Length: 455
Image (cartoon, rainbow, N blue to C red):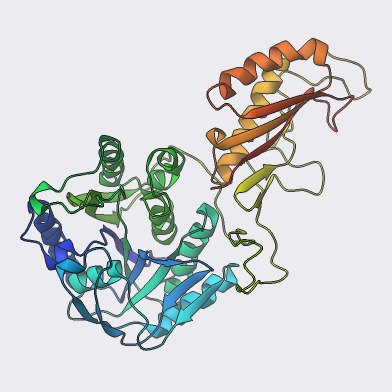
């Protein structure tokens, strides 16, 4: 089993109760219900041992929660769509697997805990998905929460921990991600026949994501977050975060057989039923190339310091970021560090990763003799390294809010440096300070110190 993929296929399904409770009131809702029914048949025909659910409508704040109550039973009513009716449920959970998942998550540095008491409410998305995909409880399930503040690194590690537990227990899974595409909901009542995607921008991004899914490009979807983050509202729950987890569980590549079974509006949101099946052969090419993450190394500082009623975990290191795709630090410091909502980069020069070569040439030779150099090429390389570190941190150049630049020869180099800088940063409008200094630790002429918004 260790040499086999433990995931038979993955499903991406919407959390809204409409396909479960009102499939006949709108054509699109009915098409989503039909797609759910088709996926149910495919699960029944598979040799899966477990249904593993990641639900964006089970939000957690501190760490990650895993449902291990053997038979959770209740009657659920959705907060937003209570008028559609009640959803009674009784599910069968794989408590053994859930406990193993919590252990593998902890082993990878995550804060995780299990939930096992009568009356703990199952979220809408999980109720809808399991009621439609596994109505007779033929397979046991496991549900994991979606932490509202987890970044790309943390979410990827959470997915890898799920894969660890599957391999450890020798189980084959169908992975189910419960999430919307766009998530902009009409706040006033609309008639079912008038339901539509809320805005043209949402529709544009939904179609783009669906195209990637149809092509089996799961890892590219997870990497698209930099663009989606800036253009779709309600950023905590749109497609990219579930895709991070899904890719980490199933395999971080693009070689899947993708099928979009249905796509429709759900109260203005974008809902789709999608299947991804690992394909045989080589993995597909990635359009992007961010660092892989194996171990989570800190919290996200999301709680206000004045919140005395919230227990504080002592001695937890702040999250730091280092990447092999940027030049190695010349001292005892990481490439970047997250504090609250901000990402702080250590000073970044133009050296190339792996070789330490300096584009544009060094400012002096090994004996200290001055050499001619190209400040434009050095500045371009600096910005390229900054971009690499930001993207490895889950951020982007567009998220930069402040830059401090250091030049060893202001009179000689400012004009060339400024022309290259303007090309990249004029649209961004980050604040900037440029300082003249006597020297830098390596034979370079320019270095950038950057503060950006954290993901």
